[in-house]
Length: 449
Ligand SMILES: Cc1cc2nc3c(=O)[nH]c(=O)nc-3n(C[C@H](O)[C@H](O)[C@H](O)COP(=O)(O)OP(=O)(O)OC[C@H]3O[C@@H](n4cnc5c(N)ncnc54)[C@H](O)[C@@H]3O)c2cc1C
Image (cartoon, rainbow, N blue to C red; front, top):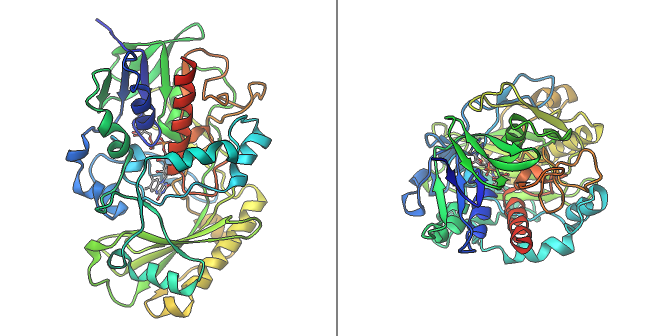
């Protein structure tokens, strides 16, 4: 017999875990959370996931999508694109940096993209109320690259990190799902790869799993992230031209730093503990991240990564195959808008200035690097902040995929809620903004039902 739930949430990442936890607060609503990767409760979190190094978290078996490839620019071949898999999604493997973004980012969502109700005045109180604990690294946890950055630049700052008081990672599994797991109306299921959403006309009727089984429901919230949410909609035959378009990420300029000597206590270091935000065209449109752990097998390797935080270029996600086990084609078209190339030059210059500063020279030297345009196009990296592939907007906007309540335009019973709905990625690392989006869309859904 087919199972039935009032709501099925697809994907247990930064958004999906929040949505499932909030919707199951109403005792009469049955909620099923389906996650492609492994599930465990907070007490059984692998030490590599709860520890200080996201590099170790990414190496935990089964916790990233292993075959997902992306092309950043046509001057590059495809390379792996990292997305979290398993309970907590990318929040379980990310670098834990917590920033909300700038007021102008959200004001532009409302003004330029028709996202009524998403101005800074609307979203700021939600950021303030998030129950996510934040904690900066202690001096003992701060590595030489971060320390050198903090002393080289007066505006460099210790990064606020999503961590519990005792230093463990605070993923959405810990913060949101754990307190909800005891509820009889919430079922959490790992190793559950969703193929597609089933429709009766334009109304949701259920979801079909990759193994061919089905779950009946009238409401599906797709929270599979900016790469996999559009793929699910495309496999489901949803007829909306904007799906998969609008893909973007913060372009980056990675500069390897070779330490004069390895850190004395590498196991205690937080991989990313400091960052520099800087203004080029507008406030905080550049960032440089200091990384003290890049590869545990190479303790003298550090990294400075400059990034363009306000992005104009757009790419695309499209299906490679109707098979749910095959990842989609991902093309970012980074730097295709001249403004992003100009800004990346500035990010590279800022990174170079830090790399050659007196404080940095005392601990490390940069590996050979090249800041010519040819090299930038061939070497530009991402910031694992994919966004924009199911973008939110006015119902009258032909390229908007969801309305400002997260509801798929032209359909009934399907919502999309994750980083894919961001019309323009904020000048921030994207976890906290995604949690805010999930809180708001869940709140709107509860208020309307
Ligand atoms: C390595 C790394 C480091 C990062 N560092 C930071 C940082 O320091 N600070 C910050 O703010 N942001 C950071 N980010 C970005 C941030 O974590 C993401 O933007 C955010 O987690 C995205 O949330 P999401 O809900 O959109 O997607 P995710 O958290 O990726 O969740 C999507 C979930 O859906 C599941 N899923 C996908 N397809 C299916 C399917 N067909 N069936 C069932 N389940 C499915 C996935 O397995 C995953 O669990 C980082 C990301 C990565 C990968």
